[in-house]
Image (cartoon, rainbow, N blue to C red; front, side, top):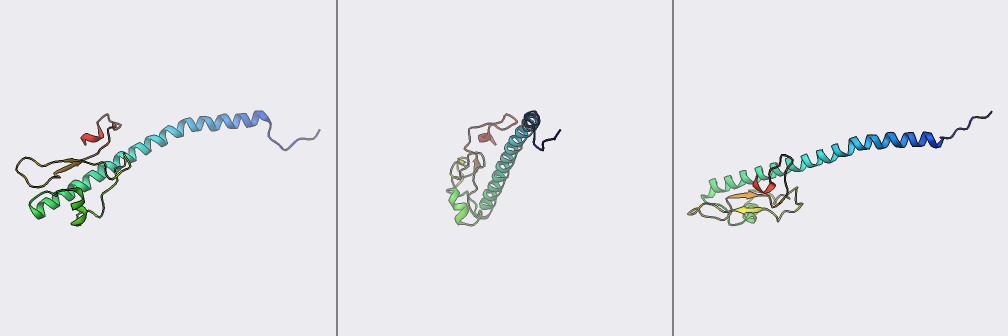
Length: 124
């Protein structure tokens, strides 16, 4: 009897089942790591912009009137993109306390979503 050199239908189904099982493990981990990297990028962007605001205030004695002033005066090269919303114009501006000059004392994300720990992105 001659042996054929092709895969049988059963062999193909077994391979497909193994691949499907591996995918059920790998795909959730991929999306979890993607979410984690977005949260880390948002924390870093907020940290950099807040540090630039502090430097601006320390150098000038007042807060900037807009986020564009941070770029104009070269405290930032450009406004970073919010990694959660994917836009650089969605930042929420927090004004300074009464009696302090300027309009931008702090910055928050414009996203209404929740982080993996349950906290709101807009409250970071």
